[in-house]
Image (cartoon, rainbow, N blue to C red; front, top):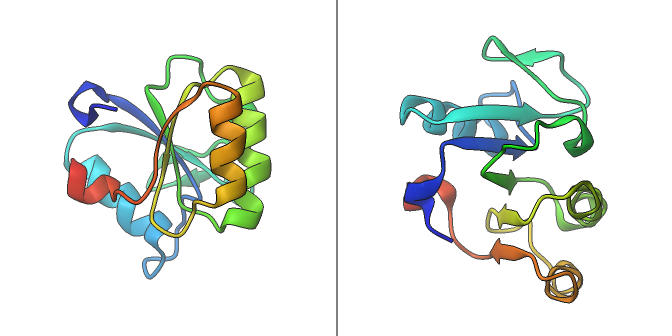
Length: 121
């Protein structure tokens, strides 16, 4: 996956809490000029940006979905993202699991494990 091809990034686990990575990553990507679409069922907006309640609500032209949630919650969100048609998924360190890897590989999804989106961009 080539980060230089990303323009529109969905962030599952976006947060208003400045101590959480969902907030730190959101602000970092915005500062770098990316169009970021926060995903979190608990908020209507974050940083003045509409917050999507689930991956199913996202527009289909998202370049990549970045996950920054625990693996247990992540697997269900991943399944919904793939069923919705998304094929590029990025997992922040700590969001991945072997169960997620097996699911992604069985569905021919392009994914990234163990790489931080903030470092790579």
